[in-house]
Picture 1 (tube, rainbow, N blue to C red):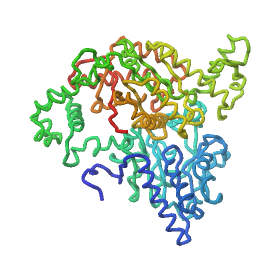
Picture 2 (cartoon, rainbow, N blue to C red):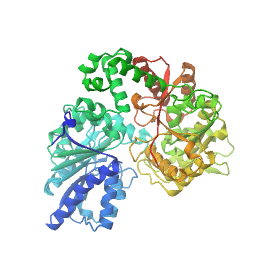
Picture 3 (cartoon, rainbow, N blue to C red):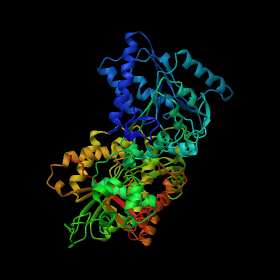
Picture 4 (spheres, rainbow, N blue to C red):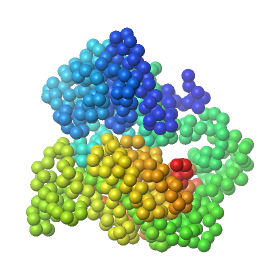
Length: 634
């Protein structure tokens, strides 16, 4: 039964602290059903999903099999989908994914495993899909269907426009879906254009459905699927038709639900500083008024009478919030020397700070806080920009071939280019010319692609006023040995970060990834950072260090959580954008953003941040870069 706070929700939704807790809840349902059916010698039919979302669930099933005696011998599985045109052993095929992540580690009989075949001849696809439906029915139907959700609202590969009664079929992939997969395939051109997928009607025949979603990037589409009317434009919304569906999501993914975004509309509140700030900003935006012009009746008409009763009148509350927002805006991100810092985001001392900017891979920090980096340097602070990973997975074969052909025209030995350390030469041009779009990068090609990102990063860093020694490349092993969405952090990754922290002994650290999907590069990097902090937290310098979180490259930090906003002048914005131009290999490669170059994304997010502040009645700026203090205790 829904609670008062879930009034607007049309789907049962459970918000968990994190992805691990949510995955454990789903795993409990699956494991209990498997054990119950095993006692009765009856099979369990599972519909399974791929991608990063269910990885923790599959790890939990493997753990239960290895450590708790769980047998999956009576389990029958049907996977949601598969890219069309990929051989089973291709590194990005879902057949291989499922074997790597689950099937090779448990005792499900091979004959019980069903993954759509992406190599069926085109003229046989329709008949094959009918056979897939028949096989599900013959097994007794799906007992549990596991789902994730894409940014277009797709489930499986049911893209916007899919019918609510659609069955297994071949589909054409939405461009945004293909763009989101571009990094997995080393470029959008290599992403298959078609896939075979269970239909929405197929999914809705399952007895129970569990959809899981992690990270802030899924928040908006989840809120629409859960709270708005079902529509073919958002396929996941058709799940409202099922009476046994539950969404398990983490806190970051829940941020757009009414009970989280506007909780005062669905029940009594326990107000705190951040929630009051959030409510007043929301009201100002809804009323299209500056904060200082809000009146008591505005609060009452929009469900905030309780706030006025406890903290009003409106005049006093407005001034308090206005001052709070204004104090967060500073042109001195490293602290203003010899100034009263009582209400400033950063301390006045020491005058010259050691500032460490950590970027999961090249371009992330430059997009989010490039102007702040320049400001810190210009104000005399010692800034180190450290790229944790090489970024070689984000370079397409086409861009690498272009760079290799250019290099071969200006060096003595055709078909060779220098390695990262300059100690030898590696043959790469011939390999790139002969490489299939679906072929995995060799160490040689990955090394060369890392060289491209390193060169771009050095050029951009210098444009942001950094010297060559101030730009560091950690090349963390987990990245060099892994692939997007399948990273496996290592102890040596933490060791490298600890070594860097103890070398720099920073007064400030800038980092991102705290609200990202746990399998994303940003989130994995943030997790390693937290582990490194645990190791240095007893060092004498740590007590004087502050950690500032910056926005992800593809999104804007909400105004109400920002505790430091750095104004960016028109000239500074121009210089930041011009610096980002150097990342030629990242044109249209920003994850989560469609049809925009990296520099356009950086510009538009900065402008939007300033426009929001202007609408609230504060000073008018060209652009802003936002930051939030990390207060978590280690």
